[in-house]
Image (cartoon, rainbow over all chains, first blue to last red; front, side, top):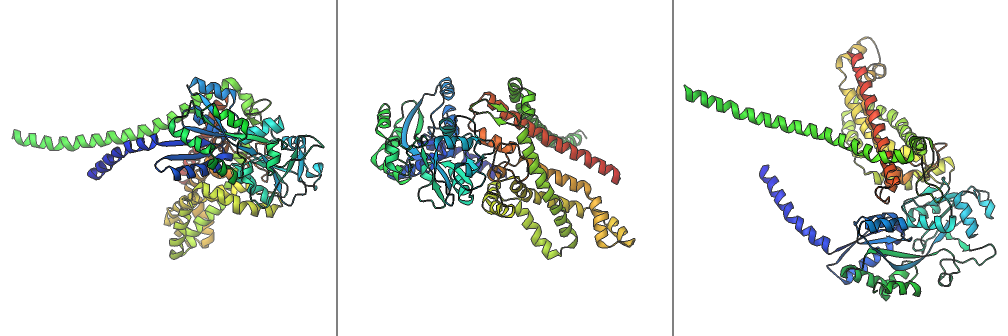
Length: 291
Length: 305
């Protein structure tokens, strides 16, 4: 028994340096649930073209990704919101210098059940619904049914973005806080009175939910996130950049992957996943990092 | 003569050294376990102290609102979470305890050997199902069923959590209660039957009360499992932070809150300390549950003597 144990111990010690090698060639990506499917597809395509390079992608929400970057636990943080000043200060304390690369554009979708007659809302109505001030569908032209809210949890960038951009206040404490975009879509498919917000990549080809058209003001133009023109011209109000944060100027391994994401092939994958390719102003920002 | 005593002293010295070495190893093990437990408790307490200083006990225990990332003003009240945790736990016990004791009684008294040989391993396999899988079943199976039954828009509520936690606590309760029932001395059963009681009366009035110490321990362990369960309640109870008003409301337990927020909270902020305080509260609750079960056990042991 002792000999068997010694053999196992030596074998384990020999394998340890091998994991070091893996770690050096591996890029660790963590963060946004909105971005996770997209970045996984990009990583798979990249790894197919570059065998030997490993890109590991996990979720956890934008907040988790940025926290991991600040604590030095990942190379790239996926984030569907901008980094906060507090987080930048903490990063500087730990000698981390967060730099931003925009890789896609999201038209944040508000979704309701397919059988719900309400299919357009103003930004003000959305704010009041999610703050809990409007409680029944009949107040916005629908049936007499209490509204069931579905949203994300506080570690989500989408949760933050929606709160700062649409609510400008706190969410209703009765909102169901789901783990991810997919769970919100699945819940609303089964709930006639449900309303929720998800990234546009999650409603592509999805039956059972409809994407609500949103107008910036009453009487304004109701834009849809599924319409490329509305997104490009800014007529759809809930447009946001999807970015990745890295530490300092990108090292060659990371730089290569980022360049792939921003290339024509990468942006093609972005379109296939249902998101929108980056707009020229963001491309200019990315050039500052040499991308 | 001297050689013989030297030999004999060598023969008694080596086994004694080995004995004391093994004794020392076991002592070290025991000390290590206690040290780890004490260490966890101290870590929780020390990391919670800044939270108590910055937030204050009244806000913590009195406020029902937990919203540290609020747009308006951060609030750190655990009351709603505390109530939610107790609701799902007590709901789970309300389902699992009668079901568990009944199943244990069936398996130890009524079931034929063949049925028992199949049923007992199956119940134990139930204990091995990962909590994520059970949470998933809660979302796709139990949830819609509850929604249909109670005419609710969705099935993500405290009842869903209770049912799932009952499934998870059941194997513990069944196993331990069955062992307790089996270890009731045959003389009790024979005496009862000799006095003319039926098998049912013997089971209900004699065997189950005699096994109450083991049964209580089983239920306490099941309760501990239910209180500490994280993934299942995170997925299936809806996680709405509002104070629940009924079992059909969406609830958010303390464990779910820690799981959601600890990953993204910046280290050494008030929010971070507050989460450790929630962990401390959970630790204390589990500790009290264990202590109570210990006291109850000792009382029953005294009575049965």
